Amino acid sequence: MDDVLLVRRAKEGDDRAARQLFEKYQLRTYRLALGLLSDQEDAEEVAQDALTYALLNIHKYKEDLSSFSTWLHTITVSRSRDKRRRKILPIIPMTQWLGMGNQIRDHTPGPEAFAMRRETEGGLLTALDKLSPKLREAIVLRFYADCTYKEMGEIMGCSLNTARSRLRLAIEKLRAQLGEEQFRWLATETIR
Image 1: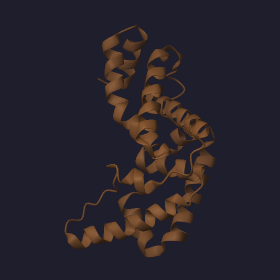
Image 2: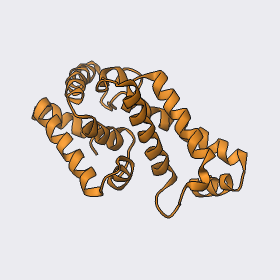
Image 3: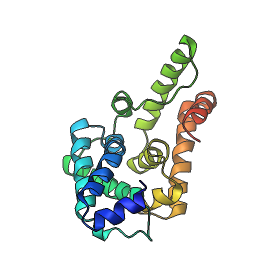
């Protein structure tokens, strides 16, 4: 069942539809929060809070302004920012995040590809750790949450052009830190 019908039914008080939305978005919301917070417990708390808020306040969702997933991502990013501010967390260590099952996809089999992936991921993690939180948000939303530029702008509270600019700047910084060869490999794997 598609989101539009599920949301309509949830707005009408259908608990089963609300449960289906919860189950459909639970993992995606958790992964987004984990990418932004890099702490499993905090990510679970934020994901639970975001989903609960969204479903309890489903009547506030406006279909004509954004998709349900964009609205939910906006809530999740906002709750993650609040959590980070409350805990005064350091910049997110991507090593930990990627080590929790959020690996960069490698479609090339064999030990040589495995070794190259490990080396490249190590450089990527170091480079990502050096990005500012806003640039890191752009990378996580685009390449880990698969958001469009429009969705990124809505979620980050900026214009579409600012979202593009942040992502472009993040990519430029990654390219400068990784070098052209490693960046080219990364681009074929994640930046599509």
